[in-house]
Length: 377
Image 1 (cartoon, rainbow, N blue to C red):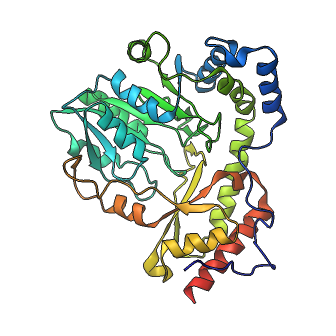
Image 2: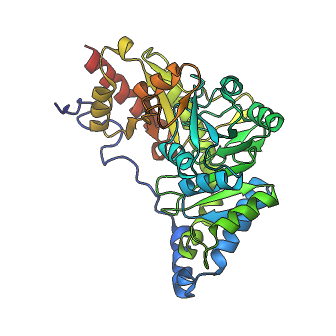
Image 3: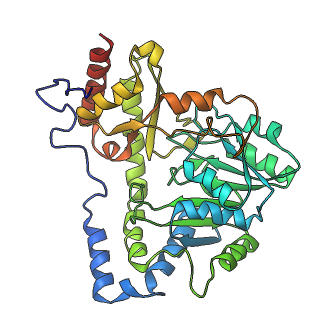
């Protein structure tokens, strides 16, 4: 049964006019669109915008090569192909991850091998990876998820020793820093997304990052079908540099507000937040995650999400994960208890709210406290 909104200050507590919109109304993006229309470059195969964006992405990440593609999802498949992953091979993947990564492994004919996640970061548990290796293992996909950052330096060291390709999915980690180095630049191939909900958005689109010219060449060869088979358009590319110019400012604001909100909710034992691990990192907040411990809360995640969305707070359930996938489609390594718990209990706050101010964080906290108090009574 649908929940009626809980009365807080007479209406939706945090957002009486509805949740923050995304993409933002940005005059610099509008000017870029107008320029592309006026000079006709929006309709070209090879205009100036993709070339400019490629240079900008390379400079932002301090990396030698960036290759623009149609989506972050196809970028993961291309990264695997660049690593010469093929039928009969195995690719290690966290038991809780974006579903497209599982499908990308299947698309190249390989078998996903599932390992558990670190319950603090929601990312692959690097300590479990070595136990999952077999003579067929060719690559590892590692994603930075929900504000958490994987121990990518340890994974890369292990992979180098074992001759494995590391595909670093940084689609949720735009502008994140790991030990002072940009997420997406640690792996053999990094992957970015510019999808409609992402921190840098062109509606669709993505990019691969690499320091290795041989991997880049294999991506180009596979993609070339008379024209680039998985392209980003000139119009999409035109809107991204203006957003990149504001990326750090927005990153800092999101992080500041996330810290405040986590602290405001610290007194709710049924909500366990992601570990932002800021001692050596600067995490990115495309999504901000908590686990809702249903046994401690006394109500279901579904009831909580329904009620809090009725209050105008854009909070949803996380991924379904892969722990229930058939053994015909994947191999499991060890227990996947933390992945299963994440699939059942994760709730994620969408990033536009983190671009508001401290007063809104207080209102969001008030709404969550009110919903948890109301459902638990």
